[in-house]
Amino acid sequence: MNLAALLFDVARRLPERPAVSDGRLSLNYRELAERATRIGGGLDRLRGRVFRIGHMGDLNEPTVLGAIAAVEMALDLTGVPHGRGAVQAAMEYLAGEV
Image 1 (tube, rainbow, N blue to C red):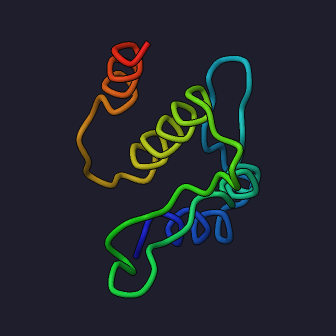
Image 2 (image 1 turned 45 degrees about the vertical axis):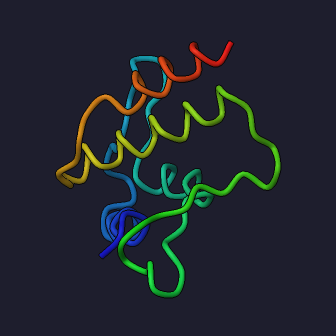
Image 3 (image 1 turned 135 degrees about the vertical axis):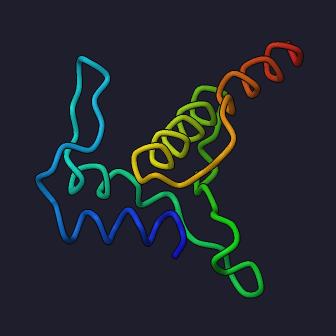
C-alpha cells in the first residue's frame, strides 16, 4: 500500500479522528485527505514504490517545503518507517542556491 492509499484508507475508516495539529490549526483525517489530493502514487513500473507531488506549474520554494513537511508528517502519523530531516535538508539546499 502506498502513502496516498494509506491516508485515504484511514480517512474512509476514521474520518473525524484528529490527524494533525500545529497548535493553531487541527485537521481530522477527512480534512487532511481533502488537502492531500496533490499527492499521487507512482505510475507504471514505479506503482507502489514512489509517490508524486503535483503542482500544476505553480511551484516555489515554500510550496516545496510545505509538500515535503506534509509527506514527512503523514509518514510519522501513519507509522511508516522513514528517514528524518527532509525539510531541514531541503531548507539547507535551497539556502545554498540563493
